[in-house]
Every structure is written in C-alpha cells, then in structure tokens.
Length: 360
Image (cartoon, rainbow, N blue to C red; front, side):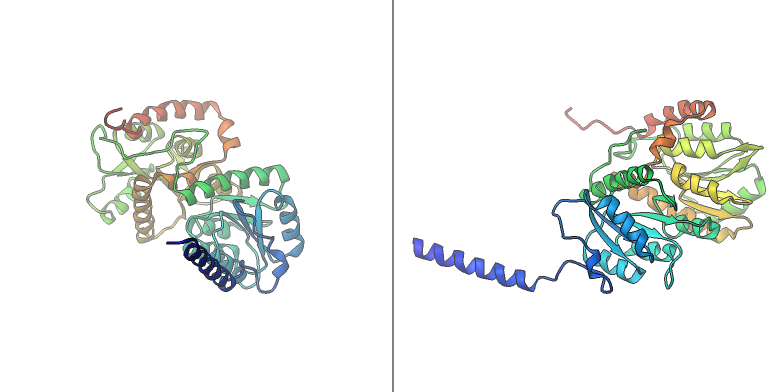
C-alpha cells in the first residue's frame, strides 16, 4: 500500500469519525432546566442531586461542582432520565417532593442504575419514609437538613469512593475489617450459609422455621452471648434480630458485626421504632431490612430470601461489599461493650480469610 492509499484511508476514517460525532446524542440535561448540568469533565466522579427547591440545588452544586461533575434535577422523572443516559456514581435525593417521593425515586433508581450509591436527604423525621428508604430504596446513608458542610462532604467522598470501585469492579479499601474477597474454604461445623435469629421469644422462632428452605440452617439465639457463640461455629449469612433481647440493647452488636463482617446481612424485628434510632442503624449498622411488629411471616421470609441472595452475590462479586461500609467516624467511637463484642467477632475472620493462591 502506497502513501496515497494510507492518506486516503486516514481521511476516510476521520470523515466517518466526524459524522458519528455529529450524530452522537448530547450530554443528558433535565428538560426543564438545561442550565443545571455542568460541562462534562472526563474522569471526574459524578453526582446527581434531586430536590424540588432551587436554593437547595444551588447550594449543593456550589459545594461540590469544583471537585466533581454535578448534575441537578427538580423532579424524579428528570433524575431518572439522567441515570438512564449516563453513569452516575452517587445520587442524593430529597424525600418530600411533589409527584414522586424520594423513596419512590430511589426504588426506581436502584433498578435503573444498581451500582449508583444512593443517599436520602430530608428535613423531616418521617418514620415510615425512613423505614421504606432501607426496605425499598436500599439507601447507603441518610442525611438530615440542614446539613453540615463537613459532614456531607465526608459522606459523599466516601460514597464516591464506593461508586468508583463498583464501576471498576474492584474491592474497596476498608478502614475497619477486611472485606470478603473469596468464599471460605470450609466452616468449622457447617459450610451451608445459616440464618441466625436473635430473639428471646421461642414462638417467633417457631413461626419462622417452617417458612425457610430446608437447605439453610436456622439457628436460634436467645442472648447476645449465644449469638456470638453461634457466629463462631456457623457460616452465618443473615442475622434476624430483635432490638431488645433479655433487656439488653442489641444495637452495639449489630453495628460492630457490620464493621467487622460486612458480608453478613441484618434484618431488624422491632416492637416499636424511633426515627433517629432507625437512621442510626441505617448509617452505622447498615441494616438490610427493618420490620415492625406485628409482622406477616411471609414478608419476613421474602426479606430473608432476598438477604440470602445478596449474600451469595457478595461471595461471587466481593467488590459489591463496598456499599456495606459503615459510618467511619462512628466506628471509631467505640464503647467498652462494643470493644468486647469486637474482640469476639474478630475471631470469625479465620472463617472468611482469603485463600492464598496456589504457588504463592
């Protein structure tokens, strides 16, 4: 091939490239607010803020636009259109909005972009919305209005690190426990993932046992000590826990369990709920689901089955464990009780330690 032929091929390639570029769709922009989308910056982490108040969006954009690529939307429909057109690492949604609540938006956002980290922002202590945010939207964190700039910057930086790792499919470095990188070679007594129920009511346990698949062991612990003993002898995938067992608050156990063993999913059963306490459990214990009594056994069965499926996804793709990271600042503030629980739980690491590759 002579120089003329090479030059002609190069010119044809450039012409085709120019033609395809002219047909390429423009960067996603909310229809009602085209000015909201900042110019695309290659390689910058991407955040989407959804709020029906312009002043809130302007404040958030001003806080983050110099470091990150920022999209804003005033309606759930606009925000979903953005999620479907480009990859967003973190989405932050208000709860109370006309047309579509934040929880409903996050539910749809999870389906549209499952590897986008989801955060709910609200100025109201709406208990039902908070519970729905974890049960339906699977939020990563819950933030209150008015926010502190340092707090929201730290939370979003943490969420972006997870979003970037999820996009790349790589494990996230954790400040606490080591993340599971591979399924354990063997458990001491039973290699099948078990469901552990921490509840001092035997009747509740008996209501649940017939509903589960027989291939999964269901273990009953009536005290925190029995729970810790079971965790040391079983490969536990799911913990179903009351918040009060034998007059003892189990919140510390659930927080430390998630910090040390993020692959274990927690479902909370409770007689009552306090909005601030539920937010604390979302942020610091990464509870998988929250159920208020009286509950329907079939609903709990559905949540347990979902948790087991998620456990197996974590085993198959350890990078997904990034979204199980807890509030780092809260993890450092350890009480005496939490320290004792942590020491016992760290003995479990031998069950989940990564196997050394052959030949190393």
